[in-house]
Image (cartoon, rainbow, N blue to C red; front, side, top):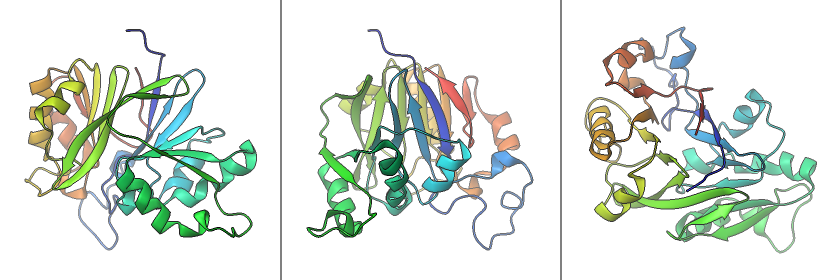
Length: 258
């Protein structure tokens, strides 16, 4: 199948607390290597005609300023945790300059949380200047945003269903520690995969580094990047040396072409 060329930008690669973590003096949090400075996890995907962001983190405003973003066509949510939704209000800037509402895509659980957390944006009597949002409920059925094909993949964040997404030959998985067999098959055949890898020790709701490596090897995906990283994983330069061929730690500002 022919897919449009995609440029993927890692807007953030950190876990919910970010790196450095507030009040921490560990060697990772005090590192001078910019690759050890991680905003909350999100990516920007650009095709020849369409630009979408996956999750609006608490760092969303700074993430958009840092890459000098001038255009955004839609927001795609993975799940309703605050480290993936809290920056939504700042789409107001795109409303203003693009003269239109911002389409939001997510499952019913996520969109219900958005309506609750940003109730002022959905009130009958709206205050001037609030974000203009257009809700689009999705299921596990494939769909398109502009010219970008999107295949939702259900993964498990302990007991919470989270949506990973496949965009052509590229798959993005965050906040997961289990994927059922049929959903796992949707990932197979990807050329590039991004997987959360919180730390080296096992975690209750995220893949550890070894578990993320095992998933990539099981599915036979040739190129992989790890994200949603905590300061507990270690310094970027040290962990990168330990990874199998074709696997890398993601970092803020990294760009890929798929």
